[in-house]
Length: 234
Ligand code: B12
Ligand code: SF4
Ligand code: SF4
Image 1 (tube, rainbow, N blue to C red):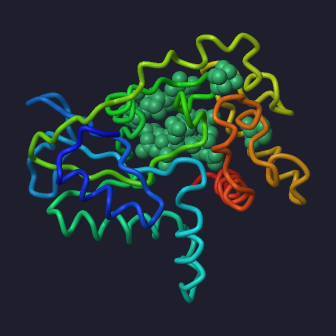
Image 2: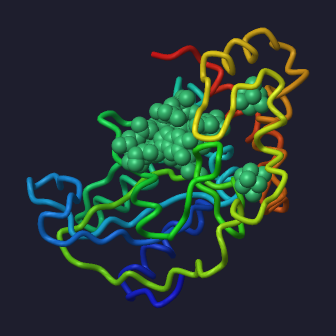
């Protein structure tokens, strides 16, 4: 992103040592459904924060190794809150996190802020990073902040992807356009504890996508996300 205000640049600079990126700014007009701020007002701007490829993995692993309990049951959420929460406090923003219920519409915000579109798998595809990116938090402000330049004039990659290998590589057919059979996926993951398939190598459907191979997550990160997906609901 560029064309940012010095304020947004300063937030990007505080995120950089943690391998996190300022992904974009979603702006809301009055009455347009921005999230609620801690003070009770409605946010006019939401800064979206995320990782691209394995960008946050070294900082997260270093933090985790230094925690007596290795970060507890949800270490990535805890790390995200430590990093983004501190920036929120310093800037007077309200912080939101993707895994905190009630779920905030992170994907809708990403569509607004980055112009992304959904892949057949449901997750948003980025023309450069492919399916290898995600969101770690967001900061809400009462002010209208600059939108910055959204560099997404590139065509939606799925529109020109003829064979759509993401739809044919799941060993149990858990993914189809517009549908994700989470029970079938979890059953398969649970029956594959030695990690011969997805647990070790990452979701085969996601891995079949040819966009952004250089952003593919490192092995440790792939395993970490798969273990989280394999947990029973609750
Ligand atoms: C609940 C949840 C799940 C559930 C159920 C997902 C589902 N399909 O219903 C489970 C546990 C199964 C799951 C799995 C995964 N998830 Co998930 N999940 C969420 C979570 C926490 C809430 C989603 C939600 O209900 N939002 C509330 C609604 C109101 O928000 P919204 O933005 O408006 O939601 C829109 C989209 O979700 C979209 N949508 C939802 N489902 C589908 C399905 C299709 C086919 C399409 C086209 C659109 C679509 O329509 C909604 C309405 O506009 C979000 C984080 C968040 N807060 O958004 C992550 C999130 C969506 N998940 C994410 C990811 C990466 C995954 C996994 C790949 C995880 C992994 N371990 O690798 C898998 C695979 C998902 C898949 N193939 O669909 C990322 C997506 C990033 C991206 N690039 O888009 C998010 C944003 C989390 C993050 N930290 O970045 N997830
Ligand atoms: S394999 Fe093709 S259709 Fe599937 S997510 Fe990648 S670009 Fe889109
Ligand atoms: S993790 Fe494996 S079983 Fe689950 S959707 Fe991906 S390819 Fe299918």
